Image (cartoon, rainbow, N blue to C red; front, top):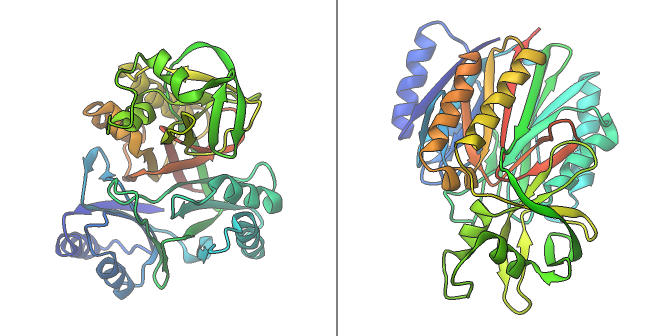
Length: 379
């Protein structure tokens, strides 16, 4: 498999970069497109359609290729891959029947490949991505490889879009199905946030709505541990500070903890809604603000993946949480460059609303404040 990554600030710049790539004899069959809502994704679709390139695309909260990050741009990873080795699928879920929809995708994939793997992007902040993952497991089995992320919208949290050559949806999913007998795929989801304090118990929650931890309103306990000042509705930056700096770490019996930042406060009872489900009775810890150690842990995890699982790669795709970009600031550039330097092959990525993949040593999960790195290699 051959790969190239291109980036531009407009459709015209992408067209120029694409034509230069094609002029060198490179003939891509598949494109992963990460694009800002400020850009014209319909024009990019038309451009790639004209070249007969299959599209797996999503809107973002920021885009990057190799070690170069940006906002409001277009980043594309082009692959020259045998069309018999992959398929693009898509569907919507207006009825919120997420698990049923990925059941159907997985069944179709098994008709094509004995051992399918999946890259998925979903849209709409209401989407229960954990149910999407479970749908794949139901059909293919616990060992199935599924990685991906939730589309963004330049931090407006209004409307996210996923798309293919002839499909787009603000409440749907696009899936790149790979034949794992022909294409090796390995991934690692790592957050790196350090925990603080003792393990505590979620004493009241419903889905992603956390009311109390150790019978104390979760907002009050978070403010205490974080030393947060001005905990009131007048503090417009409060929830951003909680989400990006003091997220909950949900403990798992197997594998690393899963991050669950608070995203919306209910002032009537000082509870908050998290990015994913937090079951009543589960164990949590609070987090310390990030530092350089967070970046080092992600890069070290990717280097370990190279050493243990994927010594060589043809291309790399990265889903990094939008919250990491906010929390880490300039350090995020160091993280992206560090990942690029592990294999030094073409790479493209996006800052996402959620990350999907197997927790280190654990199960398939929906993550937040996490970097999910996926490496591809043709066998």
